[in-house]
Image (tube, rainbow, N blue to C red; front, side, top):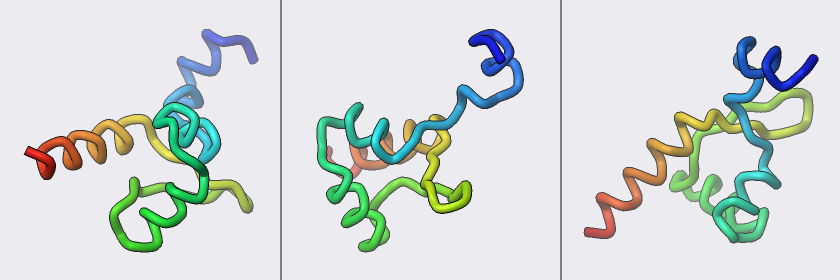
Length: 69
């Protein structure tokens, strides 16, 4: 599937745990720790791998920004 096909099917709307950590410039363990405390982004598993919707990440970051004001 090419990039256009992936985008049209919605597959481009998800990121992996490693991609999320890299984008936020934190460790994978930090994401695990936040999630275990109920303070991380909601995700879902595909087999054994965690995936996160980009819209959920944006909402989570927005909530953190509001809490930090």
